[in-house]
Image (cartoon, rainbow, N blue to C red):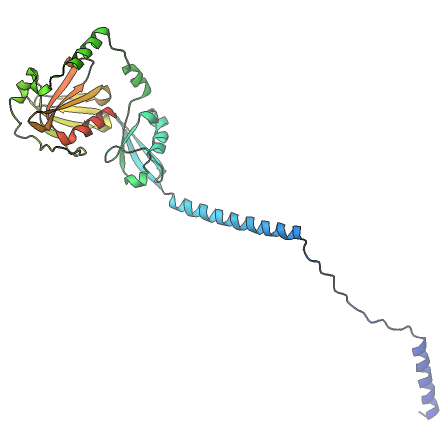
Length: 291
């Protein structure tokens, strides 16, 4: 290509460049950032706090549920047996409420017996009640209680008044001296002064009845019965029918008591027991009267 052609080409290119529209560089402008308002910040904080509290509540609930162990045991009332499933952290009062519709005894009239009388505020766990444990319930149904709530006649009230007036100690009265003069039974249980002990697991023996015969007492809590056994026979008495239990120490042998089970409203309806060990007197009264 000669010089003339080259100059012509350059002139043409320069002219085209002048006539072409100017190129505009593409610029990307970032979206403006906005700061959250104070209200939005507060709402976000509250939401986070609620979520945290909820999580902690669920965690604590799960922990509590894992500690709330359900136990299964047998409750014996009279001749009735029933299986109970309840939390080991339940109180004795809650157990009574649970049993009320099952055995038909109002919770206020129930006595839970497990290694002695259980108190309403105690938990089953603290009492040592676990799976397959046997628990006894003593108590009378409401109708039975109402039937027993009879008003004594005028003659019976007079007899009771005469008994109250008579202040001579039992051990000096002729009817009791007849038995006491026989002396201590050869198999009498040791008596201990100024001590209160729970009843032993075995029957109480070595006592005498009003005829001077040897007597053995067995508490059948599952039947709500007191068994008074002699050589000839065993008399079974419902504990709920015993109106009161009276006792007096024997003078000169205060470690032993004379005890009377009040079966009726007069002195003639008392069942007399002699040489009851002093340390068991309160426990006997407690179990019979709480029935």
